[in-house]
Length: 278
Image 1: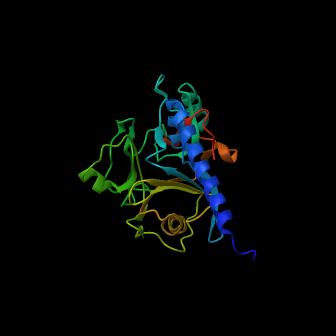
Image 2 (image 1 turned 120 degrees about the vertical axis):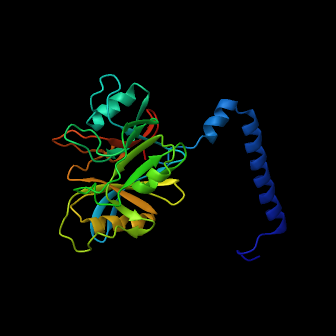
Image 3 (image 1 turned 90 degrees about the vertical axis):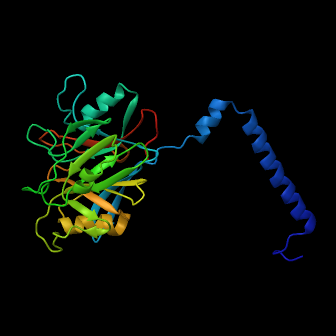
């Protein structure tokens, strides 16, 4: 008998062993208490961060599944009404809830007193209004946009489109400019622009299930930064969050960026305190 063939009696024996294994697994599942079955069925957090190199430039890319992960915005301490201003303060706030951050970054532009420049919604409550007019600076470089998070989706939506048909956002932040608009780069971006900063932004998939949070590790221009979303994540739409002050908190990477000035809005994914971080 050649080594490449299995005798009929041997094949039957293998099949019997396989079927017994399936039977044992089914029997064990029936005996599991309902709580254990629920724990086995419960999806783990999909949030994670990793290093990414594109066209010779280094980035950190964090991903979340909007249907499974708890994407939230933070601005003020609920007890004092003062701006939280740092990742450490958000972590202290969440600790009281039995939660922590899987990752977070600065979540939109803000005034010197850390009030949001545009729309800001937390837990369904609007703390700052939508701004649709053109203006100075990056925020006013139309089209700008809104990241809107619902219970099952996260979408980057152009601001004037948002004004015409605003969805019910659980959390939302407005910033600008848009980086990617329906798969195309913002029309005012220049490929060889010498305006370079450390930048961060957020992009979403066409179906709203996936959200990508990106920060550059060295100064890059808008065109190059936006191309990462368009060409390497597949984001249908992406929004610039800020530059110069861009920071990332990623405990799984042993990273929590510090800065001289406190932050305004903070955008992150929240998990249970005991949840493993990828």
